[in-house]
Image (cartoon, rainbow, N blue to C red; front, side):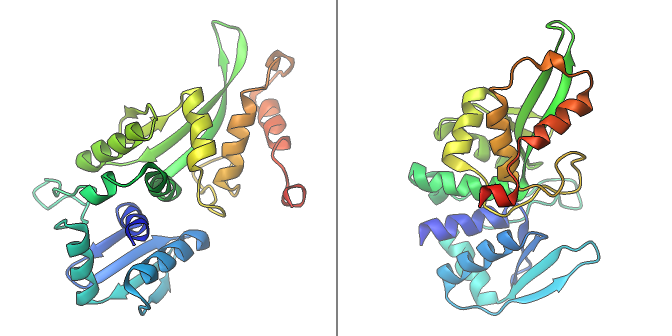
Length: 248
């Protein structure tokens, strides 16, 4: 129950919300994430009635209308609100990750992190010319977007508790040390089937786990001086991603 509730909390504090006193809502274009959301809420509360609609941009809105469930959810989590949006006066609500989540065993915390990074997280593999070393450099970053100060501090606490050394840049929590990326690949990963969105020029449409595996593999790529342009390296990197047929 606590594991399923933690997963549900992770989804509601990223791509979801609890609106007013009667609505539980989750937004996503990913069928894989929608399936996880539905399964987790049914395991916590039993069979519930979902309503769905698709927005003009292709995002699906999954909604449960029930004052009883909202009341049970807040009581079980021992928090007053899931709200992350600023109030009219500019203040942020005092939203926090529930204490029960922070005190979960490490294996469950890693599943919580998997959900959070699958919803509001990203993986990037980029190429730049290193002027000092006079060589191409492949940069790998795993980032979690979070604008709420309290939640950002809570995510940092959980990441550090599970052995990671993240940094903060603007509204992002960043994982970029080699060992952290290797540990994320082996211990956390993304929910299978979740794909990279349209804000990535090179990796749109690829599964996040495919690019995560590419990031790990790229640590072994040497002699990049043989490439003349950045695009040649991007093409090389794409050739290193197994096709679905090869994965099967």
